[in-house]
Length: 290
Length: 157
Image (cartoon, rainbow over all chains, first blue to last red; front, side, top):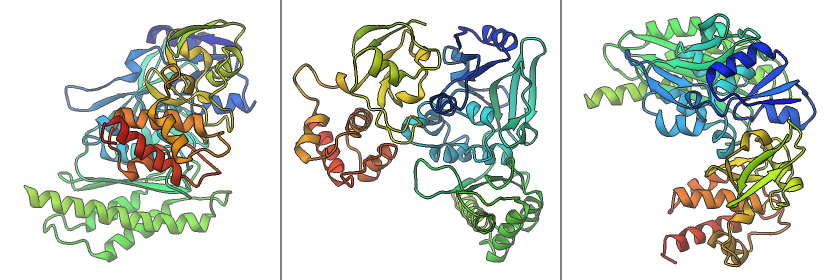
């Protein structure tokens, strides 16, 4: 095995192109488990820790946040909770403090596990993934098109994940995750919702209940139409319940060691109902302040 | 490959390191620092927690080559000579140690918590230690130890 240690992004792209047998490693929280347990013996490790740009986030001129692929979850929680509340909430549920100190969204995307904690937020908020190759340059992929199947994504063999482009929250965002305890759990299932108050739109994302993260489009359209945007009135519980039902209907869960398909569907309907209710309450209280 | 890094303030050089090896293995088997414990090898238990450039991480999930030219501080580096760090002294005093296997990781993680948050609340302590598993103590005495260590470091005990 070789250990490739590029000092710049350009060197990393060259190495990626020259060594299709290399596995990129940043936080290591997925890759090292596979190495430690003899599940994987790549020809090389491509260490991305030495590339400062991957560990930075910057707002661009239009306000969009460009989140470097290796910005650790701890920093997303500490530094971006106001701009990206949904992503910060999901980041808070990743592993343990030690894991959050190392892992970042790039690894979540690269692994493309159906249970990755940030996926529901990325699809719910129309995040865009920026990838690059030495030969073809930069390409952007909407999060909704990035996941192709269980642990499969849209990256070409010579591409690396560079950044995730995220719009600052346009309204309340919520995230919910089911697990057996409050730390160190792989999601049984998870759910994210994001309100765009000005556009009167609702984005949502289902995690760990289909081969890929999913958007429950029918649920989104239903909520966008049914929410009392004009009156700021309390949310009719029947709307929240119906939203939950439509979320559950959009999932395609399986029975596995973490839970049954039936449990996941039920849990999603509850998470859909609750997160929409929380988000709407937050919207009401923010309106009262203005 | 050769890996050169700083550990507990001293330069360390490890030779013949396998490219897929973990920092934990290098510490325990190549540079003579067996304090960090090898238990789960998948980041679940926290017993291998060390500082990497002042941030606590699971050393079993850091590739050896990633620490080249960087700074590591292990449980062996918490005490000042024979003078135990308050976190260590309080673990002894509170009886927060039984079999001791989880202790090195808990000490580093608790040390990091108090460095960043001198007056942690109980929920903050529980959250900070959520990735450190102890199967003996039931955690109550560990919480006692961390509370007291925080108080000592803040100068109120």
